[in-house]
Length: 202
Image 1 (tube, rainbow, N blue to C red):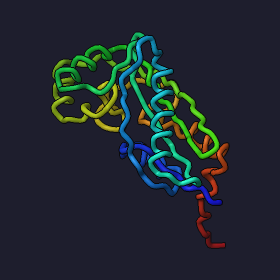
Image 2 (image 1 turned 90 degrees about the horizontal axis):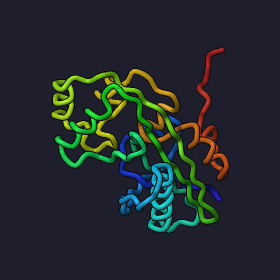
Image 3 (image 1 turned 30 degrees about the vertical axis):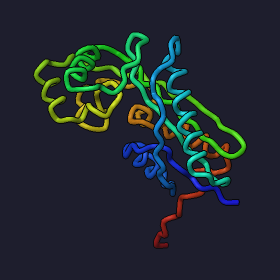
């Protein structure tokens, strides 16, 4: 039976990353409680949310042949989770805290089928240069920080803040392509099976 890939996320960035792999998929966003559990580590937090999103998506779709991909990304500074800012003031505070420092971006991904669910976590170290108050304020006024963990988007204007990354760039955007490809192949859906050779003139 052919597998149907479902992305359990409304994130346009994750959808774009899957398209980058050449995958065919449907989008079915789910809503879950994203409140951290007391004593939960950041890595366990993103692992749990990714798994819950995948499970909720699989249940909502109700198709036995579905493979449902769930993902969650958070920014971690000094062991503390920085979620999505609640308002521009919170975004400015987050960016001020990240200025001139190295933080971690943790992304959990989970793939659920009728038989099993597997979850992995990708961790990248991201270093910011020192940011001026005026540029922080100007960035927050663009609105870009408001739907992003840690208050910035590396694939947008926020990329101007980053001096170095150790780890997966795509994970910082929201979906580690390397780990995603490995998971899909384990579940019988290798990404290369979607690739079509381009005809060449001999």
